[in-house]
Image (cartoon, rainbow, N blue to C red):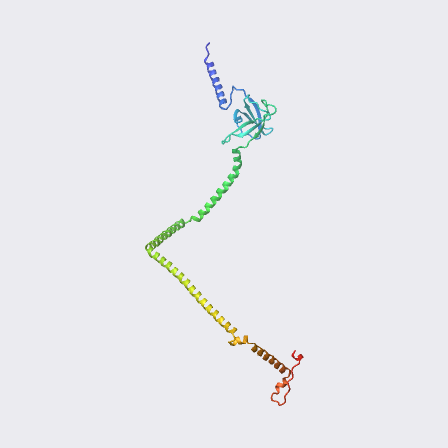
Amino acid sequence: MKISREVKVAVLVLSGIALFIYLFTFLSGGDLFSNQDTYYTEFDYNALSTSSSVTVKGNRIGKVEAIDYIYETGKTRVEFSVSPQLKFSKNSVIRLYETGIMGGNALAIVNANDGEMAKPGDYIVSEIQPGLITSLKKNFTGLSADLDSTIRSADTLMTSLNALVVDESNVGLKSTIAELNATLKSFKTLSNSVQGVIKENDNKIATILNNFNVTSENLSKLSNDLKDIELAKTITKFDESLTSINTLLASVNSNDGTIGKLINDDALYNNLEAASKEMEELLLDIKLHPARYRRILSKKEIPYQAPTKDQKN
């Protein structure tokens, strides 16, 4: 049987189309010849793409087949397929998580291991696991604001410093640097001169320092000697004073001197006491009889009358 050229061309075109479909499906993560069970879940937003992986304990067992937006509920419905060999509870959770630093996402089936087994076509409850990238995205806004504020402050500081340093005449800074350079050169010259003088007179300086040290020691010794001399003179004078006082006290205690007789002679004391008593009586009589003493030149005598006890008091 002879096959016409048209049939051959048609078969070849159909084969190419079938091969293209198979390769496209294979590259998309699917398999035309495999039998898969399909399940559904829902999220508040879409973070997946078609052919995103579906895993169990980190092992790929399926993929996302379709993603549809439900206008009535405002949710995203995700259709995914897994191997028929997988059996999991209807109470399990479909977890959306990040797969890497590039921000890819995938679904993970967290088996509850209780209750009725899920059947193809069932809706499974979903949850979202925050990842590292999501956390960084949440915190990046505050970090960016702080970084922007820091950069602005640094820019303001540099602008202020530039305004202080830069002279619009373009001469002030150069003049300042030139003066500073001249000052440093003068200081260096002076330092070299001082070093030269010190080096040339090194021996003389050492001699002067030694002489000063000897002189200081001599002055210290002289000061100590002067202190000792003054202290000796003071002690000698004090000793002489004590000797004089002892001599005076000895003469007072003896009966030879006038002071000693006055102190130690009882008769002298009695005489002084009697004379004092008579002087007291005389003064009392003058007070009581003053007329007697006014007529000293008169021939008429007024006899003496001893004062009574009441007059004495």
